[in-house]
Length: 107
Image 1: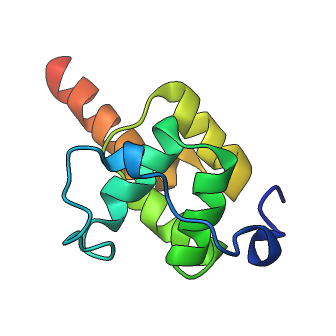
Image 2: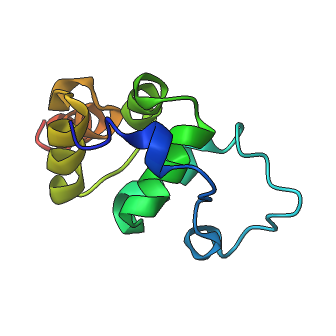
C-alpha cells in the first residue's frame, strides 16, 4: 500500500494551509471539519498532505472512513481513493449521491 509507511514519513508534517485558505486556521476545528480537510487533500493535496492527514486523523483506517463521507469528488479522484485506500465506489457517498441524482433527473 502506498501510505503504509505513514508513521515514519508523517513526522513533523502539517496539512498545507493553502488548501484551507478561506478558513481562520487559528480557530479551525480539525475534527469537526475532517471531511472538508480530506476532500481538499484528495482534490489538491501533495503526498505530504496525505501523510499529514493520515497522522492527524489517526491512521489509514480512520482516513478511509472519512473519505467515504466526502459529498463530491471527480471521477479521477474517486478512482484514485478507491485504488489507494482499497475502497469500492459503492462505498463512497459521492458516488451514491451521483447515482441518486442521475436517477432523479432521468425519471
